[in-house]
Amino acid sequence: MGDVTSRTTSRPLRIGIACHPTFGGSGAVAVDLASALVCRGHEVHLFSYQTPFRLSADSRVHFHQVDVPSYPLFKYPPYAMALASKMAEVAMNEDLHVLHAHYAIPHSIAALLAREMTERAEVKVVTTLHGTDITLVGTEPSYKPATRFAVHRSDHVTAVSVFLAEETRRKVCRTCEIQVIPNFIDTECYRPAENPELRAELGGDEDALLCHASNFRPVKRVQDAIRILAKVNQWRPARLIMVGDGPERPAAEALARELGVADRVLFTGLVPDPLPILQSCDAFLLPSDGESFGLAALEAMACGIPVVGARAGGLPEVVRDDLDGVLEAVGDVEAMGSRLLGILADDAVLERFRKNARARACESFDVRRIVPRYEQVYTT
Image (cartoon, rainbow, N blue to C red; front, side, top):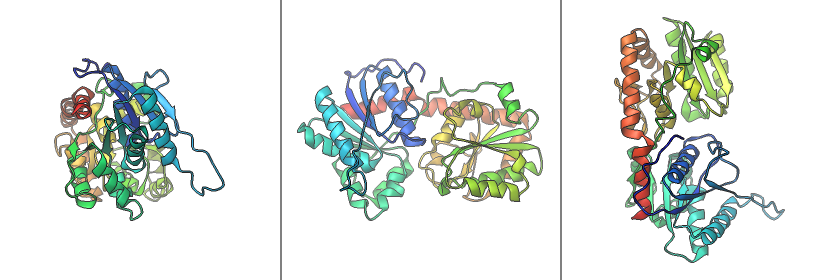
């Protein structure tokens, strides 16, 4: 992460952050927030069961790995208890001011329990909701009471989009106060850059280069990305770079063969740093049927790459239709492909979309604009 100082005007805080370590929006945002807070003069302690993929080796964030002992008595290792114990230990030893849980279950419950263990009521618990912790996990009968408890008992609750805040009130807690703080990007790191060698290597020397990046879960509709490529490829040569991995990959590979575009699709698997790939592309495809925010779309936009996606969830709060990209109804790959063709067919139009996408990321979602809002939450 670049220089995100303009040092905080608030007093330096000691903050504990719990997050998932895997590829995904919530973990990425939590680690980037931790790094930004350190740059702004705070002390940050990060908790997870393994080193988060986004945490650099030279980071000044203090990482605490949560080890879960395996005993024959436990059919399932009690991670939430181990996490709460570790958070309580560090909170007491380091005199933490705030425990910030990214994702309600189990992190928020663990933070609340950790505060009780410390017997220090002044330790604030902040919960940030990211999406499936409400729309999927939070509505499971086994977890809904715990999710409701976590949201009710947290000192502050934030959500990454208006859509998610409304879903939380509708499904979990009608009267809860939820502040919307969107996800963010370091626009000094994620920025347009030319890499003709990589573009040629990816097959985009003469062809239009499209990209999709996700965990390949059903909600991402990765097969729709293949269908959009097939639509575009009928009229002009194009290639699609599929970054990531997950349960829908075999079906996507089979569809590419069925539609005769298998030689036009590159499945890269998990890529630790997809930034150079993004910077080399002409458009980013995100046809998901339920993005709570769409961090991958924001990363593309910061690189000056227009987004083609579905008008669903929180994505319309990030991508402005016909300005930064294209939004159509979920599953309408014909419309998505046709409108993308219109953009790719005219260099001036593509350049306008590129500039709009970059400006949108810088003006509304830059890390320097968003992180102070979390600092305000911590201190009120």
